[in-house]
Image 1: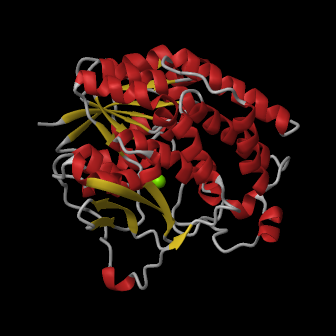
Image 2: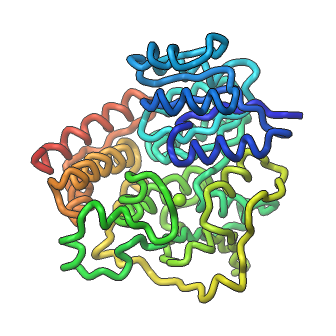
Amino acid sequence: MRRNLVILGATGSIGENAVGVARAMRDRIALRGLAAAESWSRLATLADTTGCPQVAIANPRHETSLRRALPADCRILAGEAGMVELCTAAEVDIVLCAISGVAGLRPVLAAIEAGKDIALASKEILVMAGRQVMDAAKRRGVRILPVDSEHSAIFQCLQGESPKHLKRLFLTASGGPFRQASARQLEKVDYRQALAHPTWRMGPKITVDSATLMNKGLELIEAHWLFDIEPADIEVIVHPQSIIHSMVEMIDGSVLAQMGRPDMRLPIQYALGYPERVPLNFSPLDILACGDLQFAPVRERLFPAVRLARQAVEIGGSLPAVFNAANEVAVAAFRAGLVSFLDISRLVAEAMELHRPHPAGDLNTVLAADLWAREATRKLSGC
Ligand code: MG
């Protein structure tokens, strides 16, 4: 039986990969809807080449352009309400969310309420609203399937294991392009250098986040919610080869790892096929060509992101949303040449210090903390 899929954020790096994977899995997956935030022209091309019957554009200003670019029989929805409608339609079975920022939050919560399984690639969703998302998923009996490679690895390692046998998680980090850089070198690196990721090809924001290890901080928060594990029991270790995508330690001391090529199609395919495994239609990991696999601790003094994330999720409430939003603004300021690379973590730490954490049980409180952090970080960065 084919499952009907909607992809939010179809025009981004993960979204485009997901469209490709869905087409390769066409005997199991039917593409029912594609959504993008802004890139209406690319969205139209994707809908056209895949024959997808419905699209949604988050920014309603592009609705007219989109309508002109698509055949009359393609249904076009717009705005947040349009994305919600796309995700909650009766025929939809699974929603893959890869839209960046907060734009996917309400559509994903609505999809969970409507009983749809979620394949989750957008980190912000669990970072900002982890409690709401996981509680709603449990109440509605839907699956939250991780698409992030680290979380997919942990999810795969934990298949068939009882949660009470889990002791620790090891999130692996490539270490990014500045893994071995000194403090003096780090003060001078620019945006272009930060974009040169050694092992993964991704969008610009996440590539900068990989260089600062903010990405690993966000992933620590995600892992806390997905696997119901204390932040103190999640360790981040640098593994430059990106072959082991993460590991779990069980109470008997066994450590299980998941390995594979650094290719996002693998975790996407696992999430869309779950609980089945689907034959791979591209080249597998060549284990003999991997060479040495190395592991090292995170240099916390130069890369405080993981420590800040752990602090954010331990205090909880509105603080993880502040961590995330402050980082977004700081990355934008770095990209514009207004602040240095090391200022990104400094700004996040300062915004977190300024913030008075408060309970954030509903979405409006979370979004208010997000706005507060954006404003505060803008002021702190002088832009
Ligand atoms: Mg990842």
